[in-house]
Image (cartoon, rainbow, N blue to C red; front, side):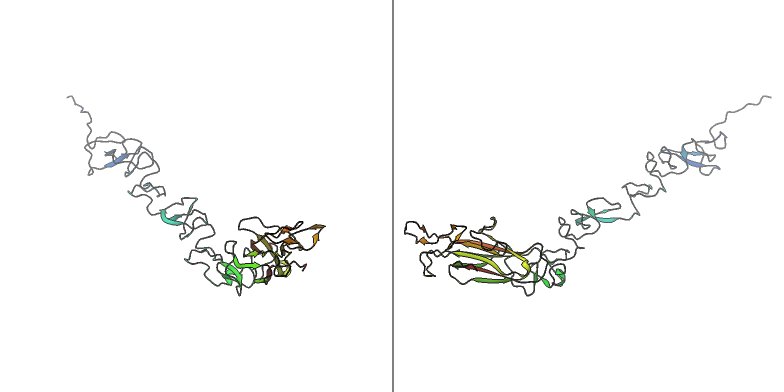
Length: 360
């Protein structure tokens, strides 16, 4: 009797070696397992390419039992992978950068550690030009931010919506001892002036006519950068009527520091704001304490006669004499602390005069 042998069909229970992928294998069969193609070799495959086997073995060496790979072309993205700050879904849970600490960053234009504007929320530092602290009220000045110390300068240094707030004396702790903050400057108490800080804001003394009494002003300490400016017009009366000498022009403007403790102050005279300093026409006192604009000299200097002395009255002509001309002029005087002088609340006195020359 002949025995017929049937070929093994692709059925459940047919042995066929590793990876029996019978299409009739169902989850209820012993040895059932589902495998997924792992194209990037990261240990997880995609459900797009899956196959069941009945012997618990993968149908191909590169197939794996774990699915859920959201990008099977990138071996850095798969279920269970740690989430990184990169804007990608690294662990394939349909979220990107979840579970990571996010911080608000602000544009920091002056690199002082404080920014301004709308925050950018990110899980990694965007780098140069950003700060995690907000509230900078001037992002173009690295000396102005919420962490800065308020100083006496007329600005809101600490972005607290105020200027020079705090103890006026404490604000001037690094300036002249005894000074306090007034008008955005460290001044000595009591403050003698609240103006005259620039040529354009010069303290106006009016006109000083030949023979008028001298104008005397006492100024207080000039700490650090502070200057005090004065302005006046020297008026030439032509003819010396005040002295009873019609043949002499008595115009002689003098500006000098009559009290200058330790030579700590200096003066400079200008004809206009922005002009170079005026050079003395006749200087008897050399240095920064005295300025003289002399036209009435009755003597000579080194054998040469200076000025309009004697002179004839305007409208008349006398042989050998100059005509007494009108030399009226505006003067701007700056008084400041000598750079090398120490900061201290010490006063000085300055005199402005116009009259007959005297070698005082």
